Every structure is written in C-alpha cells, then in structure tokens.
Image 1 (cartoon, helix red, strand yellow):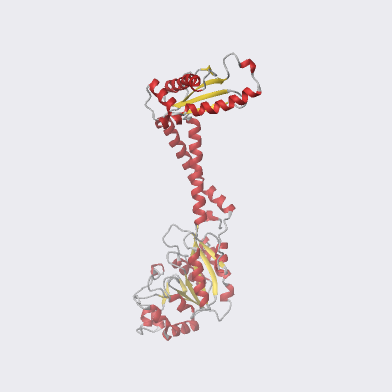
Image 2 (cartoon, one colour):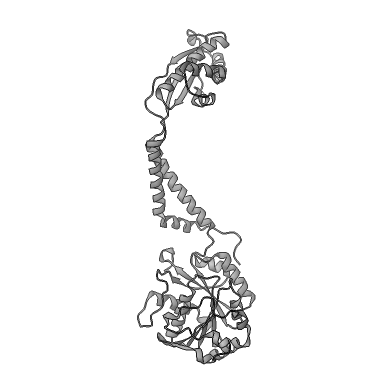
Amino acid sequence: MKNTYKEIDVIKMIKSLFRLWWLILLFGISGSAISYYYSSNIADPIYVSNTVVFIGKDPNSIAEFNYVNLEIGALLISDYRELINTRQVIKEVIGILDLEMSSKEFRDSVKVNSMDGTRFMNIVVTHEDPETAAAISNEVSDVLVSKAVEVIGTKNIQIIDRAVVNKDPVKPIVIIDTLVGGLLGGMIIIYIIFIKYSLDNKIRSSEMVIDITGSAVLGITAFSKKKSTTIINDSRKSKLDEQYNFIMYNMHKFYSNDQNKVLLITSPKRHVGKFDVISNLALSFAKSGKKILLIDGDFKNPIDQRFFDLSCKIGLSDILKGRRDLFDVIQKTPVNKNLNVITSGYKLLNSTNAFEKELMNSIIIQARLKYDVVIINSPPVLLYPDALVLSKLSDGIVNIAAYGKTKEDDLDETFNRLKNTHTNIVGTIISGVKKHHGYN
C-alpha cells in the first residue's frame, strides 16, 4: 500500500528543472520583452520634486539650537504633516495651481518626510508632469508657511530649498524593469513546474512502483514514436531484445518452476502499451526455445494480429461458444515456429460469465499439457472483472504500468484487487520510458 504523503525528491525536481531549461529561458525572455515594451511604450513616466523646509522659532534662531528645540521641532513636523493633508490646504493649493486632481489623488502624490534627528522636513511630490510636480511642491511649502502664521500664530517655518523641475523620471527604469520582468517570468514557470511536480500522481520511477505495490519491477520498455514496436525474429541484438531478455531474466523464478505455466498479463487501465509488451514478451520466450501459446482474452480491445499476420475470423470466442475445439483455433506465427496464438475472435458480449464456466478452465488444462508457457492477454483490472476471474486460472500475474500515464491511485487499487484473489503477483513492467528520464 502506498504512503499517505508524497515525498518530493529534491534531486529529481532539480533535474526536471534542468531538462526544462529552455522553457525557463523562454519565459524569462518573454517576461523581459513584455516588461521592456511596457516600460518603454505604455507606462507613464513619474517625476519627483521636493522642497526642504526648516522648523524653527524664526530665521535668526538656528544658532540657538538645543535639545528642547529639537523635540519641539519633531512635534511640529507631525503637526505640519497633518496640516498639509487637511482639506483647507489641499483645496487652496489645487485652486491656486488650477489642478485637475481629487483630494485623494493629492494626498497620494504629496508625502512629507522628516530627516531623523533634525528639524528639516522634505515635501516630496510625484506627478506625471515634471513642471507640475515642482509647482505643487513649491506651492505646498508656500501655503504651509502662511498657514503656520495663521494656525500657530508665529512664523516658525522657513523654506531652505525650493523645488526645481526634474526632467529625469524616477520610474519606470527600463533596464531594471526589464531585468525584473525576466526574473519574474523565470520564477513563474519554475513555480508552475514545482506545483505540477508536487501534484503529479503519475508513475515516474521504479521506486514509486515498488513503494505502491510492494512487488518487484521486472523491467522497463523504452518509449517509441512508432505506434507499435515488435521484436524482429533474427540473430541481431537490439535494445528491444535486451530489454525483454532482462525482463525474462527477472521472471526466471516464475518459469523455472515446471508447475508455473500460465501467465496473465493485465494493466490498471488502457493505453499502457500492453499489446506491444505481450507480443514482445511472447516472442522473447519463443526465441529462448520455449513453446509458447498466446491467448488473447481481451474481447473489448483485442491485440492487433497484423504483426503476426494472423486471421481474426476464428478465435477464443468460438471455443467459449462451443463452435470450435481448442486445436481448431490455434494459429502458427510466421515470425517464430515456437509461438502459437489464439486470437480473440469475434466479440463476446458477456465475457466474464464465459470465463467463469468450466470450458475456459478446460482450455487452460489442455494448453498446459502442450506448451511450456501460456500467456493470456487480459482486459484492464479497473475497467472489467475479467482479469480477476482469469487470475484464478493463472499461475502468475504481470501488471503493466505506463511511465507518466498510469496514476498511483490506479496502480494501488489494481494491486489491492489482485491481492484479494490470492494469486501470485510476479511483478510490474514499466512501459514507455524515455531515455532521458534516468533509465538506461
């Protein structure tokens, strides 16, 4: 049974990122391009101007600075900051400059900053027009001086530096925005890859299969762009030969026992490359000198027998309907004299009931007497009950899981159902593995 919590393999995660370097680079370049275009052509430039004022008793009292004056100045800065934000001051400044701004827009554009440890105060204004920014900063300081006399009753504020027009915008900064855009683009795709990896519940390694099923991984078969790939019956050694020879080697405990002859091959669901695996495994056994009978027991989706150049007009369905005897429907394959096949024949509507009858058991008993290994192609476990019925007639079961397709939950449920039949589970073959995923 699989673990409740999925552990993230950091090393594999990093390897995945390296494999997708081109996608990260693409998103980075795209982010940079978008940011550059936005900063250069769409974003409105923002300009800043500031006025420096000094809080004191009067212009001649700076020389008499002491700690008490500093504390009083700090308090006055807070008072003047609030004074600037009053509707009275805002309306007066907007009216004098004839600005098309709301009170909220004015407050957002005008900031008052105090210089720590001093009685100096900055009136900083941001605006899309540099002249307007400077005008607002200067006018706010002028109104503030007049309001100080009016509210405080004394002229205790003076303008030290008046605002000047600054033609250099503080934003956007095209270079920085371009770099940040590229960085964000790369980070977004990395985050998406991480989330996808974290939520991925597909089979990605032999370790995952072993952890979920508690049984052996017999081997892997390589991904092929071709619709189907079958071993050619000649003396040449190919990668495909090596893969299936390795699988046969890992199955030696099963077929070295003379009593183990009937092998059921199934899968959780469809589209796992089951037909290729069954055909190639049967050919591999035949090439090793064993007499093999391949029985196609999947009436819903039978094996494409064109690879063996066989007729599908008669088959297993004819035997189960009582129309033919076993040896009437067995066909020899031109690819290897040791491999015989019983095709599925015409579709059988209620195959589960047919498999439960004594006639199917009789077919298996007769096949045991003539063949070294009998391989049965079964429908997927999670789609039809046929596999569970046929498992009772078999000596061992091999499951096929497709790399990157078969879900962990499906594999777990498949093995739970098979274990309930108390059959011998030989192991799992992982199909469709690409070379760059860490398999040889």
